Image (cartoon, rainbow, N blue to C red; front, side):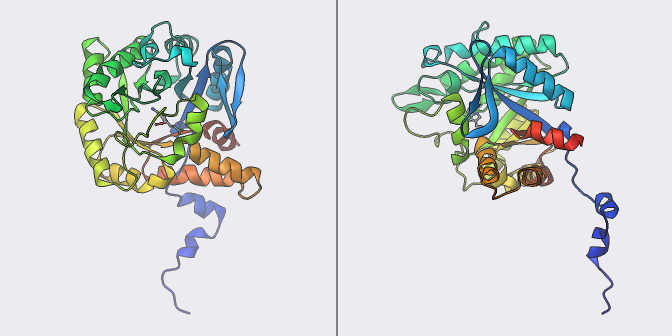
Length: 325
Ligand code: PBG
């Protein structure tokens, strides 16, 4: 048999396979989302996300210390608040003494090297469970921007490195950029959830924060999973309005979106490997149907291969342990 090209030659040994590997996953790629609760000395596992917890600030500090030792440098915080802290205007979100802002400044004080990313959206603080203000059953855009601007400013004041608007309101990046700049926070970055889809994969996250919408769904602001051109429009607007990073969310069913944005924009594209994607593998692994470690690494690698330069993932700690070996 005369075959001039035999691609298998480049796969014949571990040494050669490693030499020709096109995508290399490292701990630098990870942003670890962390859930926090009020109070002290509590660490509650989230039932639909085995291995992921809600921490009070004391435990959160310990967790972050462990992660830093493993080489994870970046974290994204999400607060889980009691109903008594929620109202229709998400007032608690910009309270300088609130759980979130106190956590940001305490973490920065203890671990100045940690990169802290935030979440800007009304849902964790909203009695309606929506990301924007609700008026007569509708999510109103422009009035919501003011709330988001206040929230972003409070987070910047508390020491946030990267503001993460996840709300999908129109014009939010430009609005938040202006508020930050007007107040002297020109160095605070914005990672926009540019292409955030109305996805069923957020289910376990909404359990974790108890933040499911009280009525309706999020389809008037989050994107239709059927659309890719629309992602280009969203990304273009966020780019023009001053975003430093463009995020795609979820990740695994949206690898084509990650690729499209990375082919079309020169700023870093990031991806959010969401709660449902985590839960699917954990459930299958608990049943012995999939091998946890290998499947996890393949998932993360595929997100990077598609064009993501950083990945928000609940697998960050587990994967960091494996990568250290
Ligand atoms: C809401 C928000 C959501 C997630 C991050 N921020 C859920 C939603 O839009 O309802 C989901 C993250 C995940 O599923 O891991 N602003």
